[in-house]
Amino acid sequence: MPKEDQEEELEVLQSIYESDECFKEINSTTFQYRIGDEGEQMSFLLEVSWGEDYPEVTPDISLDAFYNNHIHREIKDDILQRLKEQAEENLGLAMTFTLIEWAKENREDLMAKQQEILENKRIEGELKAQESPERQVEQVTGNKKEKKEQLTKAQKRRLADRTDYKGERPRGWDWVDVVKHLSKTGGGKQDG
Image 1: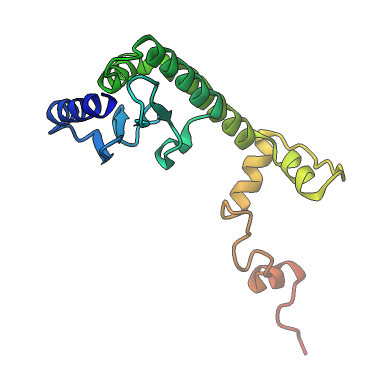
Image 2 (image 1 turned 180 degrees about the vertical axis):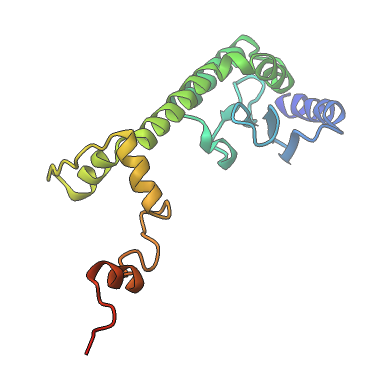
């Protein structure tokens, strides 16, 4: 009986998702469906595998595909738990289509925490980037707390004007202007 149900469901899935680029039949009992647009941070790849006794038992539902590496483990666990609850409610019925459609309809809700995690990581990155150079030097050198003198904006501007904005002074900045030097020292002609 389960084999007949599986064959029937396979035909239905193939006809429904025939031209859907998000659907992929791995083999006659394993299917993948990409929920969301490819490469989008809020998308994920759902894999459903039927065991021998499916649909009398729930299918194996997985988010372990490499495509899902961007999703936080806590989010994956939550999505799997909620999909398994849906599978339990549909026990004894052909449910692969139902699970895929449920995941598509609830994608924003399922991935809401993922958005929060991404936002927190972005903010952490910005805070690290804004961290003072003194603090970064402190982290690199270990516990040595070498405090650099804080410059005012005007001092920084003057320093930048004397340099090429990479901190380098222009070539010849310390050369002596011979004509100006001689005019100041009186190194003119000597009578004799």
